[in-house]
Amino acid sequence: MGNCLSSSTTIYDSSAEPTPTPIAHEQARRSSTVKGKGRALESLSSSHQRRRSSFMMGTGPSISALRTYATLPNPSSSLPPSKLLLSSANTIAVFDAYPKAKYHFLVLPRYPFPPQSDPDSKDSIVPLEALDDLRSLLLKADRGAREEVLRAMADTAREVEEMIRDEMLKTEGFEWKIDVGFHAIPSMKHVHLHVISEDRISPAMKTKKHHNSFRPDLGFFVSIMEVQRWTQNDQNTLDRIEALSGAQALLETPLTCFKCDEPFSNIPKLKQHLEKEFAKEKATALNHIARHGRQGSSDEDMF
DNA sequence: GTTCTAGAAC
DNA sequence: GTTCTAGAAC
Image (cartoon, rainbow, N blue to C red; front, side):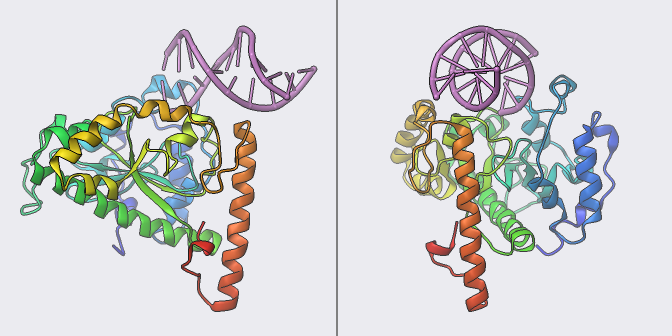
């Protein structure tokens, strides 16, 4: 995956990008000045802002923005490097427009989704409606196809993880945990897999629901490995899909730090705590590296 | 999903 | 008086 970012230097078709926001321009400009594969990630860590008008202009999030990306015949020539991290024959990875952590990407299956046996084919092993969301994928794709789609998404997520870890090392000098999973009830059309760093430090993290929707222990955030386990048993899969629809209430769970369970009366206090925890983890990790020459692999040293 | 803002909470 | 949340609008 060494030169997987090489496509980001491609000059993209600006006519396919309706009036990019100043932020998008800024990201693209900055990212082109940083050399190496981490450059696109550089802009992710910075704070994101968005003007109200961007919603109307169609550059902001919309219910079908992801679908638009996923159905592009040639994503790397249509999407700017500030939006597209990488693309393969059957998946793309994009920057989350409102990152809820220092690193936050979405992995999408492309449509048409070609069979593994013939990646250049124009055929799709799943109908478009099977890619609406996780529920649709599990219900409307046949067993072989759904496992192929999940596997392709998991593979791309691993690639994204590697890129994030490289970037973590470069910017902070240590690596911390990354979560990979789906939202039980997504708000954007087209099935997408979140790849998000566990710091959960971001200006876009603003509400209890935001925080709860990414807690790995609540049930609203469902890890890809768990989904892959479900699909090994059809009856179990149906039960789990049923359970997904009841997940909305989980977002009302009282605000606590998902790592230490400490309760917080409001978001600003939790955010302060997360900053403090991250600083502590970093200090511990850097100390360990100084003493042992490499980062410890125990939970103790991981964020 | 985000933004905006009224009024609750402090 | 200021901070913060939550519901409506987009």
